[in-house]
Image (cartoon, rainbow, N blue to C red; front, side, top):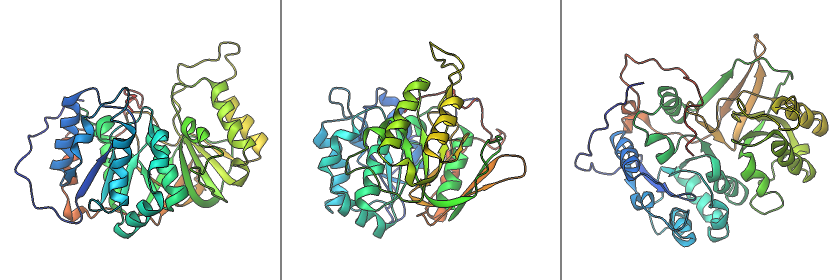
Length: 352
């Protein structure tokens, strides 16, 4: 796809309650300043008043600032020091979010976000904050594109941007997955989860949500099958899986990963094993992960899973905050109309 030129920022518009966006950098630093500027400009042109922009230029060791600086991205909102934004936008993933969890008042943060109807976007390592927010702040968030990882690309994927717009402006969202499944699942509950490595690392801590009768979504990247099974086994032994009604796997990018001892021991073998062991149905192919073309969907919202006629399944979400499209210019995120909107390879970029 040909790169789309990002216009320079024009004089700042007057802020409104519906367009205040705060950049939050909980994890790794941004290596490319130009990419940060591209993201900020693209979000500005989409109608957002972008605040806390300095988070994109901070660096301490491998992190986007010191622990205190990264925690302050959230704690300033929790304490009321800054206005509660309509959007909290993760900068990128990497590592480091777990270090700041004890320094955030999640109960206050969740209360302010619920009152405001704030949408918090992130994935990868950022899901440590999202999980803690759900566990201690009783507030949902969104698995979706992030500033540096996605909006900072010269030409963000048309599929991802279109899915972002639909996912945040519609009060009901249905995701259809066409891939044939082994399990026949008809269930509903709170859909939650995120990155498997991060989620497993929080098992046994107060930052792990206690969801009974839920639907657990999981994704990861660059992990051998045995490592995936080991982390799933942690969730099983800790009692988390037995409380769930189903597991929904996203894209683990297993195309080129083979077990060195037994190539037949692949992701499917792991999924089948954990399904039998935990006595829980498993669905695969959900279009999200460390991939170029991803959807946007709520974590912590009510979801219903139904099988469709071709062997695939659908997940319908409801009961989550949305953006007012009339107060924004989200169509600027899309490529020119002559370019198609559909998934490309799905594995062209692993930025997190």
